[in-house]
Length: 227
Ligand SMILES: Nc1ncnc2c1ncn2[C@@H]1O[C@H](COP(=O)(O)OP(=O)(O)OP(=O)(O)O)[C@@H](O)[C@H]1O
Ligand SMILES: [Mg+2]
Image 1: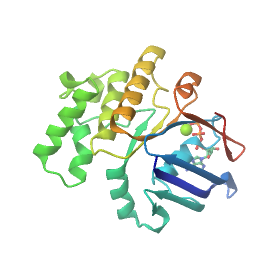
Image 2: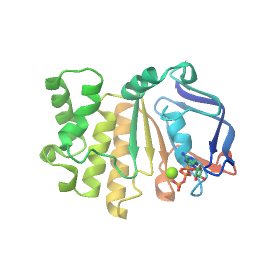
Image 3: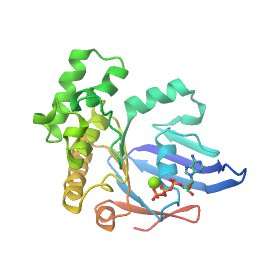
Image 4: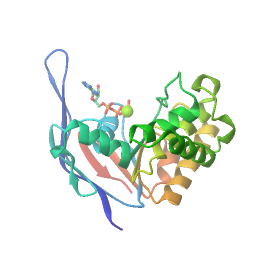
């Protein structure tokens, strides 16, 4: 399998409001191949979201590097990073992060419109991907008219509409009841397989993690492989 993501001696510090520096982690070396799915676990505050945001170029490391598809992200300016995120990375968040005033179809079409595609193509593709996540009948609903599980399906469709190579999910089932969460997890695993994605799932849920090929724990500033 070929490598899509690599971190080299990755470190992140935050400057706290009182002027103290918080060292979240340092020296993280991680790699992910195409087709691979891994879980990242760890206590609240251990740095899982911070790590995922660095993998997805939503934030910059204090030290170390992230390579995506062989490209050093630290060498890129903000505009290039936005473009890379738009095309190569799909994000799914615990709280869905949908735009409330837009319909499901509009939320899903947005990344395509942002990448410069025409409206007709973007909405045709959005309809297809909404069908893939089982929401063909809800394209015209706004988030407030959808259940939590449906909102997460819209968010998954939005994450995948541009055909990214990498899927990064931060507690994707964290705001859902057990049964709905399990259906979302199954959907993510199916899409991962079908599209040959490279996926990182951050989770507190043991059941989620055991479905992944590898499990990593973030603890005391270090990333350790558990399985
Ligand atoms: N922008 C920020 N500024 C300062 N400190 C931050 C910032 N973001 C996160 N932190 C701190 O960094 C640490 C790691 O946070 P992070 O959100 O990555 O943890 P997490 O493992 O995702 O936790 P959870 O399981 O609760 O989501 C925490 O102590 C948090 O308070
Ligand atoms: Mg988090």
